[in-house]
Amino acid sequence: MRSVDERAVADGGDGHRALPMLAADRGGFIDRHQLWTDAQYAAAGQLRRVVDELGIELIRFSFADQHGVLRGKTLTRAAAGAALRSGVTVPSSLLLKDPSGASVFPVFAADPQVGVPGFAGAGDLVLVPDPTTFRLLPWAQRTGWVLCDLRLPDGSPVPLCTRSLLRGQLDRLAAAGYAMTVGVELEFHVFAADARPDGGLDADQVGRPAAPGRPSVVRPVSRGAQLLHEDGLDRADDLVQLLHHGLTRLDLPLRSLELEFGPSQFEITLTAGDAADAADQVLLARSAIRQLCRRHGYHATFMSRPAGAETASTGWHLHQSLRAVDSGAAVFDPTTPGEALSPVAGHYLAGLLEHAGAAAAFATPTVNGYKRYLPFSLAPDRVVWGIDNKGAMVRAVGAGSDTGVRLENRCGEPAANPYLYIASQLISGLDGIERRLAPPPAVEDPYAADAPRLPTSLAEALTALAADPAFAAALGDPVVSWYLTLKRREFARYLAYVSDWEQREYFDLI
Image (cartoon, rainbow, N blue to C red; front, top):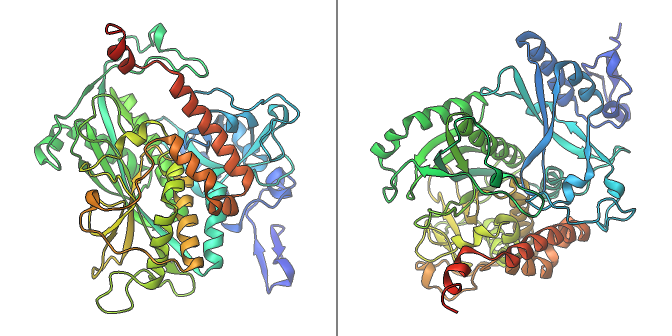
């Protein structure tokens, strides 16, 4: 006798598959449009059991916006069942805003000029939860968290969903016979927060679209200029223990917590793994670090070069390698004795270099991040590669080791949208493989090399992106145009702002 939850395998496959779906959930948005895999249905069943057994009262349904910032809704336990059946609606205008919350497109128009359907009149999109991402938040009482994908009301994908964009590029990679492994080194600053005793904000800290309020007042927590100083890290042990406990309780693959060179500068590294999982992990790790710190009197920021951090900016070093889908074998390891890289790795590397200017718009998406590209700063300033050279934009590491060869791109900033940053590497590397590009020779003196410079501003990077056909071919013209429009408006606001530097330079002199 068959269970009522059994369904025939699609296209007459052998046997049946059992979907653990409650009868009340049949016919919902997710079931109707067949948006979950069997693994997601199974994870949803486990989610329900955990919620019931642990008495979870609130669940955050979140998605990554274009800036890599988590947005979404927090639902009560009673409402979560409906969300697992039919998703959660959010305004489509969330994808049309700059970092300040200002709408860049005419969101209430019949045609908001986005170039894709589903955005007229700031209508709703549907957050479809991915139950495999469900976690309990150790810092928030009886609260869970689940990451979502974006869908249109007719069930079709939202072309501007950055999580889906990465998965689309990973599908292209799989079609070529490869899968991607990513390792993360993520730097950030943590300061002691000078908060008001009542926990409130001062009037000038309240912002409005296109005009954020005054930032938080903070103090450093480490002296700086002492890379990996054990006593320095020990002085911040309360913070170290806080982050270790919070991140590991989230089941994030934390490898290390390190004291970096600059004052108040720290780094976490995550164990290398599947690229899609790594992007999700970075998104949650950043949010966790900020929220954990805020609850314990600290202020964490992933801004690359905050005021007072002139001695060392923060970066996001992205380690990447490919493996064969059919065998799982590493394909970057050299096949000829004496060579540093395999031919496939060489082609991939050449693609990273060929498209470095355009990819910088995704790897370093803020105005502030370009102030990090300085010589002799442990950050790159030109498009070169080197063998185990930390001054090069791309560092080839692992030759002859038991970890395998990987390419470490050192030009990214920690605020980058993880889905777009990783996708930009895939697009670049795949183009190099498909065109069989050859990399130039490795350099030994990266800051003296005769090579193209990385973009010196967000505007330069956006110009390079607009001129690079590889990204439009991979992502589609509407996606590239959408991103360019958002980021050009952001840069225009920056140019229009009268800075403290200008005031100091000119006000009393002329």
